[in-house]
Amino acid sequence: MFYLFIIFINLKYTDNPRTAWIFKSLPVNHPGEIVTASLKAFTLKLFLPVYLICTGFIIYALGWLYVFHIATGLFMCLITLLGFLSLYKVDLPFTQDSQIKTTNANFLLSFLILPLAGVLAGIHFLLIKLQVSFIPI
Image (cartoon, rainbow, N blue to C red; front, side, top):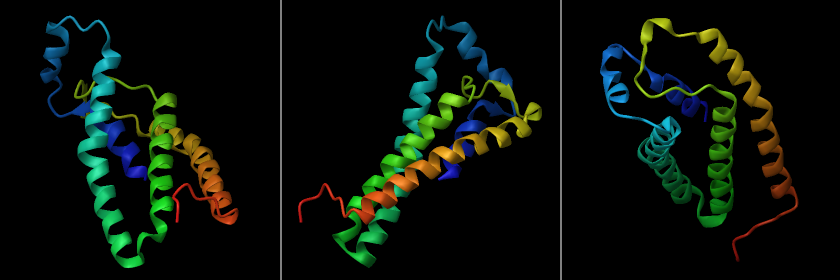
């Protein structure tokens, strides 16, 4: 799950920051739209295909019994990603030189999100213990 954060954190770094001229030449009134679009593209093109392949293997090996848990895991991964991004200062993609990475701040910030992941895992555990399922069997 943490590879999501690593990829999105490193999305702003590039070896050639001069390519960010496109953001300066166009009148970007709402840079949040570009960041949101990169988050959507990242989630749909990178994360979901890998998650669906893993889901296919789990369903093949264990059957349809665990579909609720897989869906809950997907939901919690996305909530954790959004929680992390709300704490993290997000810049436009490919705008900063890769030589100026501040890894200490990113490392400490990733520890701030761990309690959220723990709370979501606890909720999932309680759903299992209470045998709550939103899928009719």
